[in-house]
Image 1 (cartoon, rainbow, N blue to C red):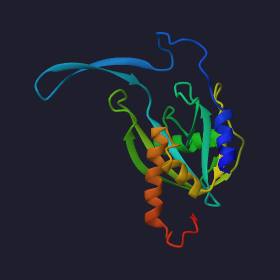
Image 2 (tube, rainbow, N blue to C red):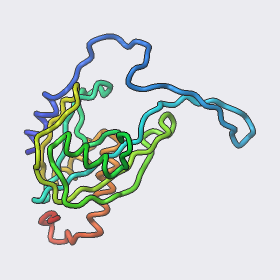
Image 3 (cartoon, rainbow, N blue to C red):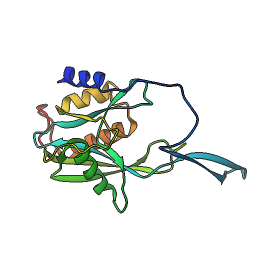
Image 4 (tube, rainbow, N blue to C red):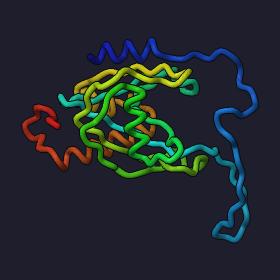
Length: 200
């Protein structure tokens, strides 16, 4: 299973095509001034982006569902992640998470639990990311990817997901934080003392 995941990671990647250029299309850069504790006024630039959700999906069999997708700005070219995306109009975090899970994998959860929110990069992004644990996930439809998305998904054993996290292979901060929260939540709920894995 590890070999298959690593093969997907290697093949489903993006490589640089041109030099870096100035401009803005996907994100907008804004600036705002603030009064600091010493009374000085300083300006800070930030990326204007919508709030997002990330979901850690656990299947009916207790496997972890991960995705691999090309990431243009990661030097590796692709990363192992969990389903995630921006909120659409009139959505809340849970609705956005369920929708992104369905679009990127075709899976739907039996239950979904809110695990909290965090800042992805508080020095440059002011919006938060909501994290969720989705359990009892099963395949209900085909992927429904946006144009320009190249997402692959795979079910892996929970123990392998822990190994990948400990080895630093969850390099996306949102995925790492979400899985850490999910693992802490599950450890409180489940008895793992027999070492035989998780039964969700």
